[in-house]
Amino acid sequence: MSSYIPFPSASITQPKQLNVLRDMDMESISRVHATYPMRISNYYFQLIKKFGTPLLKQAVPDIRELHDPDGLVDPLDEENLSPVPNLVHKYPDRALFLISNQCSVYCRFCTRKRKVGKSEMVITDQTIADGITYIKQTPAIRDVLLSGGDPLMLTDQRLEKIIQAVRLIPHVVTIRIGTRIPCTLPERVTPELAQMLGKYHPLYINTHFNHPAEITLQSSRACSLLADAGIPLGCQTVLLRGINDDPDIIRELMYKLIQIRVKPYYLFQADLTRGTSHFRTSIETGMAIMRHLIGHVSGMAIPTYALDAPGGGGKIPLTPDYITSLDNTLQFTTYQGKSCSYPNTTID
Ligand SMILES: *Cc1c(COP(=O)(O)O)cnc(C)c1O
Ligand code: SF4
Image 1 (cartoon, helix red, strand yellow):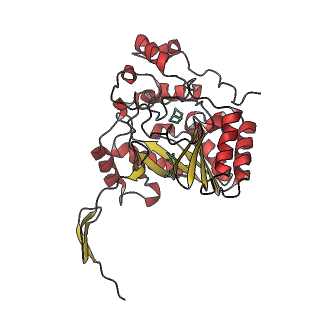
Image 2 (tube, helix red, strand yellow):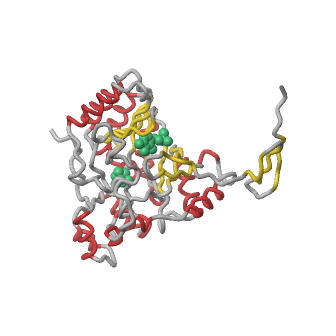
Image 3 (cartoon, rainbow, N blue to C red):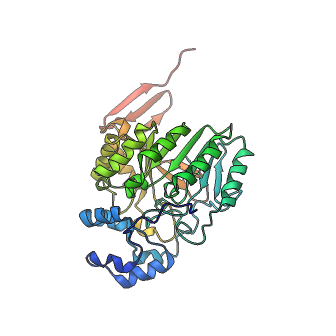
C-alpha cells in the first residue's frame, strides 16, 4: 500500500500546464524543472490565478534558481547533524524527524531544496524504524518534530503508525508536526485526520502561511478542525522579498492568523540555500517589520523574528534593540520612541 495520499487531482506538475498564466517563460521554467521539482495543488493554483504575484512567486519556477553559485546546498549542515538518515539532532532535547519527501506545493524557497521532492530523499520503512530506534535510545530527546517534506502528505494510516510509535517512547513529551497543508491543500484536513491526531496529545502543529491572501474560507476551516481537536496551532512564516517584505502585509497576515486561531511562532530570515537567493531580504527589513509590530499590535500576533545560523548553530532571535544603556539604571526607548528608565537595583 502506498505511504502517500493519492496524488491530488488536477495538480500542476508539468510546465505546459502553466501556460494559462500570463507572461510565462516556458523555456526557463522547463530548465528549472529539470533540476528542481514543481507541484502546485489545484487549490493553490486557483489562488494564484486570483491573487497573482505574491503567491505565484512562491510556487512557479524562476530561472534565478539555477544561477546562485554562492548559495549553500545544505545551509544548516543538516546532513552532518544526522546520526541516522533523515533525523536531524541539533539541539539536545529535540529531534527533527523527516518522514515524508513530498509536498502539495513545492515552495521555490525551500530550505531543503537539495532533496525535498527529489530522488535524493529516500524515506523507507527502514529509515523510519531507524529514526524511532535512535529516539528510543536517546533519553535526552523530549520533543520530536515531524517534518519532511510534508508529513500530512502521508496517508492517515501511515502517519498514525509513526506518531503511535513516537508516542510510545516514555521520554518523548511533545510531538510537533510541521506542515504547509492547511495553507496549500486544506481539503486534506478531514475530520478523520483531526480526530486521529487528537488522540496523541500533547501534539502541536506548526503550519506555514506567508501572505494574507493564503487565509481563505478553506484554510480557515482546516485550522478550525485541527484547533477543535485540541491541537495548538503555530505558524512559521518565511520573510520573502517581493512577497511579504512589507510591514503592512506582515501585520495583516499576523492579525488574520490569530483570527483563525493560529499563533504566529517564527518569522524566519531566509536561509542561504542555493537556488533561493533572489528571495532574501536584508536584516534591516526584518527588523523594521518587527518594530512596526511590537507594541503596535496584539502581543498574541507577534512572532519571533529568527535566523537559523549557517552551519547548524541553531535559531537566533533577531530582536530590535530597545535598550540604550544598562548599569545601575536601565535606559531604554519605548515602542513609541520615548526615552524611559528603570532603576536596576534590588533589595537584599
Ligand atoms: C528548528 C529546529 C528545531 C526546533 O527549534 P525550536 O526553536 O524549538 O522550534 C529542532 N531541530 C532542528 C534541527 C531545527 O532546525
Ligand atoms: S512545504 Fe515545507 S518542505 Fe515542502 S517545499 Fe515548502 S518549505 Fe519545503
